[in-house]
Image (cartoon, rainbow, N blue to C red; front, side, top):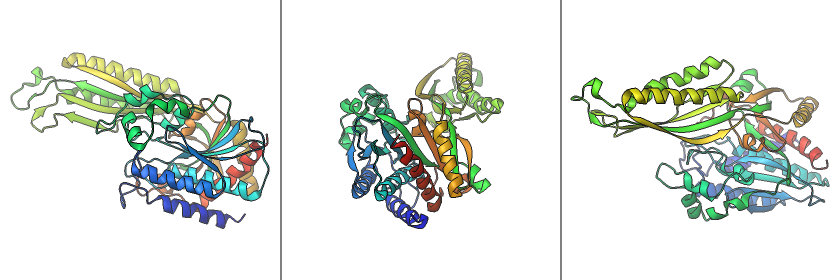
Length: 413
């Protein structure tokens, strides 16, 4: 099939999906369990149904389209990504991979090939964790890692829990466990995604074959001090939460740099209470996100943070709390599927390289349990999680063709 035709269909889908944002003209804001999420899911449903897939949604907010094979007992081949976004994000992160998987299914339907295994296309809910500070909600639920207690534990900035948001969306948090697929029912998982980094763009390459995905640990840290007058409270009599928190925060990035192997650590959010210019801070909340292909590095930085908080809070006279939001280990992706994708790149003349992923993806959660592979397409200037995010529709089309090459083989194994 002509790549131009495939490119046009992917462009049509993504251009339409751009409309489903809470911030028109200011990037994509499509948070889980919102009207924008519902509109996107409805479009994905309609598109899947148009090409002949059986469509259903689960109790975690995931949407699935199934192309039946001849052996209902054989483990399926699943492919997809996520449909949610960050706040003021881009129009390609996650949703580009969902559209590539739908297009891959179109190509298989149009080929008329018979296949043994079911092909399942999925749009996962809440991979980003932007609203509730978590992540991988939909894919985690599919694997049986989410339950009702989990939905009650985490809340958004307005104090709304995942459970409350689910009810408003029309889902029952008591049934989130029903989203789990039976063990052995999924044979392979394939995900396309934009790179979200500069490597492919700088090297002028179309495709990245992902060898592994970094592990991630996320924490919300709260430092408790005491509110006092900024002018009348002597420096040696203060319990200043900002002073204490900043002494820890300023070390975190340097601890990651010491590893010198691609390990990163980020403090991306801070909140000061009461937050007055003339008030000594009573409380500071800040997030920590640590990522590495070496899990020992992540654990070491987390240990140093705890030790530094213990030391500095003891000096101040205050206290601290650490709320663990996410802990997931690094994963190596399937070597056999990578080899098949590389062979297809060579046969079709697509430029490519192998590289690790510094961003987390649904494949990170899924790859802990199932044979999983990812392929990237180039991100212009390496920009992502911003309105300027851009990937060529022609590169996404080539990714869908490579996925079709791979999945056609997997469906009859």
